[in-house]
Length: 290
Image: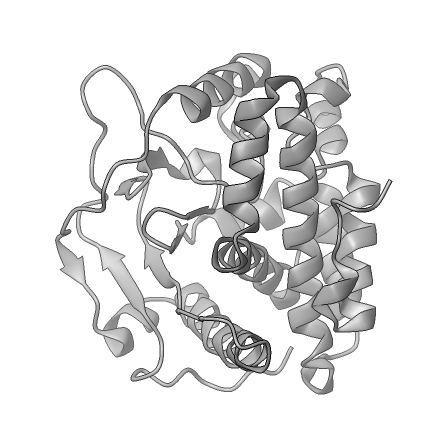
């Protein structure tokens, strides 16, 4: 996908100094938008995915969000975005995402604020608490930040077979989709519904993740003049590789729909494709679909 180079004066980015640490006694709460469930840890680090899934679910439900704290590091966009090729790609995508979504909000008469893209290594403390790179990229609604350790992209290619720049753009666009949900109030509505009906918490989470996939497709669809041959295939391959059923199966675990948090490979491909083909956010009503 041919994206323009980012404008350092128009995006919000930060490189975290030292990666932050974990508070004594345990980790913090991830935001609503981890791109992949922690089963990736089983594939890369040999961790029991069933145990990690249960732990993450408990943490997400019990730990309150923490206010964002001042961090060491750099927020000079030119420096942060040129630290490596992956960072440059991510900043170019962030700039394009801002330019795509801002007018959509303006046309609707809705408030729009840019998210901040955070690069870190190994572990980080976000406004939602502490996280580590094994959990994958995530969005924190408390500080409206997208967090990524760019080494994830190597794992995406080597461990999951999702190659190409569009697969990497899909990662950022999905997390940006969660920012759209925060800005529209969908994220807050889902959290209230999950609290009111814990039995449906996972099912609601799946619908929110699939909507973020669709929003990623909407961004690409609205920039289809920049799409190159093979891009759609790269995106769909990535969506398929990180479906809950595929990750669990590849980790040697039983496929239990009650544990799903992001949707099956088929569902993720379907909603990404729907957004891409329509280029219309109104096509992304995963909550109203059967």
